Length: 543
Ligand code: N01
Image (cartoon, rainbow, N blue to C red; front, side, top):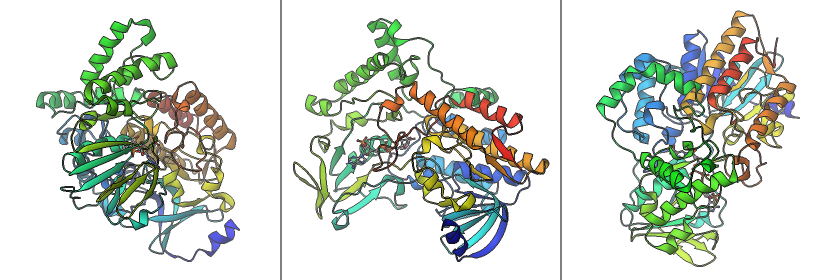
């Protein structure tokens, strides 16, 4: 039936390419560049009217990257590294978007990108060994290779609250923020969600709105970003040392030069731990999780750092009752570690109210605001910082079908954690590559390092195929099974799988639980991928 559906698709085929790429974010842009350099005809399709991916859509106030700017850029071009200068330790969204536009201009990438076009379906045709790719404008193209650069966090999730249609005010999801400034002045604003997004948007809105109501279900650990403008001397040294930095981040664990200190927190006295934690808190950013090697492996070790952050929250938040509501209880750093600028301080403001919706659940959105089981809150604007259907969500927005018309969505119906080879490919879907797909290191790392590694590996693979007269590459089922098992075993040796999060899929109703992220580190993962390639693409069938 699926095959019939495939054949019945009524679209107008307008072009043929060697490769079609989905998205013009960091992944899509670099994939277009690499393939074009290698002489393959390539077209990227992008739903937005500009480049940038998540940095195009996430225009909410306070949006900035939680990886230090000097490591959050492409490293493939020395010239680009020397030309571009970041203004602060953690770059804000407008600056990152300017960078991506600069890259697109510098390498003349726009001529191979079709904007304002969403790919709706990609079906593999066994007879022609090509992918037929359909767009939302009714056109269709064919390509030998189908490559997704859809990102891991691009499918916004808005919980199905009763009554949202009746709300008389304005509402926004942070990941689909309007291009025009939203004016909060004189307004009563509600924010639902206290993940990375909530922690950034809450302090920014609080400065402007008349009243801000934060609807919190799960309190967060968050540590100060200690953001600051970059010193010209520091920039000069960074630019002088970029080849060493590049090597270091590529071989590292997380895609930044930091490695956990080779010491157990339990081997230090409470006083010494306190000193180490205080120093990392002052240093800010992602320093705290790197203070000891066992923090995400051992429950007792984790409790020491969790206690430290809780004590900091009690110090910062003046009202002890509010501070208690803000106490996080899950294992520290088993959700994406959050860094902030004045997050906990914001709860000391007179115009901010914290509402614990774990204690009094949200019941409905009303025409005038939001009702919990306790009371109704009147609101002019409602902001959803409620996150994403991560990892598989962006892929499932496209009807991807491989051999015999089998749908990717059906193949992974029992969870994405058991169904890819290296997070790049999946059995039954020939000549299909995923940039930062499920079961690759992706979201626990500096995405830029992971993206460059995948793009280069995929481009090399396609070149290898051309050089060796290979028409089809496809992951073998047994290789896929082995990788998925390995991926899960690594995750189970940590505390990550003991916390419900968007990593596990627990944030989306009815999503199968899993852990579709490789926690082995970007350096070791790169080595594995290189070895696979060096052995003639071991684990793949090449025909
Ligand atoms: O999403 P989240 P996010 N009722 O899923 C709450 C990246 N990112 O957009 O935990 C009430 O983390 C939910 O509560 P709970 C980064 O990787 C990076 O903040 O499910 N509340 C939670 O508090 C990040 O991890 C940057 O109980 C509901 C929040 O909404 C990832 O994106 C910036 C609810 C969702 O938090 C996702 O972050 C921003 C309901 N029905 C994002 N449903 C930087 O680089 C959900 N929630 C800095």
